[in-house]
Image (cartoon, rainbow, N blue to C red):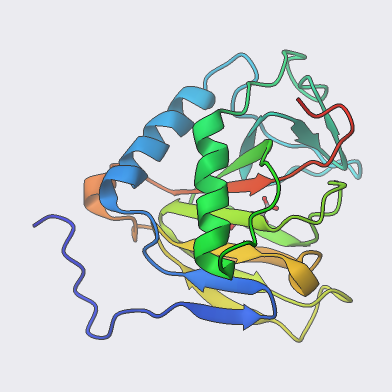
Amino acid sequence: MDTFDPELFPRQREEVAPGAVHVPDWLDAGRQRELLAACRAWARPPAGLRTVRTPGGGTMTARQVCLGWHWYPYAYARTVVDGDQAPVKPFPYWLGELGRRAVTDALGPGSATAAYDIALMNFYDGDARMGMHRDSEEQSEAPVVSLSLGDTCVFRFGNTRTRSRPYTDVELRSGDLFVFGGPSRLAYHGVPRVLPGTAPVWLGLTGRLNITLRVSGFPDAR
Ligand SMILES: O=C(O)CCC(=O)C(=O)O
């Protein structure tokens, strides 16, 4: 079987901090393939995969595409204001349902109270990283949902006060879910390292894709 997992001890669900939960292998192989195919379509222009430039003149090493609302440093818009100016692609209903199911599975029944309307896809090649930051441009306190495809990464989950310690390093593999809400919603987090060549062969992806789902809470949310 091509999806055989040679793990000696299955990885366990773990609460990394209050309200921050890692659920290994949440997406099965079929769901991972479907999500990857959808990401490939979303990555095409217009409003496709782009390099994000920061106000200080730098560039983010992970390339990005957005659905629902377009994130740019450090706000949201309905068009790709820092790229081809095209309208952002719509956020599909099924992705919102996936997000709500993820929250329920990670945090328990009754925890998915809002409708997801933002997706950010981050594509990492072997050298890409993401610095410690907070997801703070949304007005909603709903949990952030993070899904991983492809290469394994080191995901650093910290605290709400500083970019530095204390933090916990978690290995996120293809199919893993990470949800952070409640007291951890505004925790600093980042990706210090991707482990090239660790993607499952059957997925057919070189590199890592992260899909992060958020609730905007914006008054004009559709
Ligand atoms: O790639 C990841 O796992 C993290 C992505 C992230 O932190 C973000 O999009 O804000």
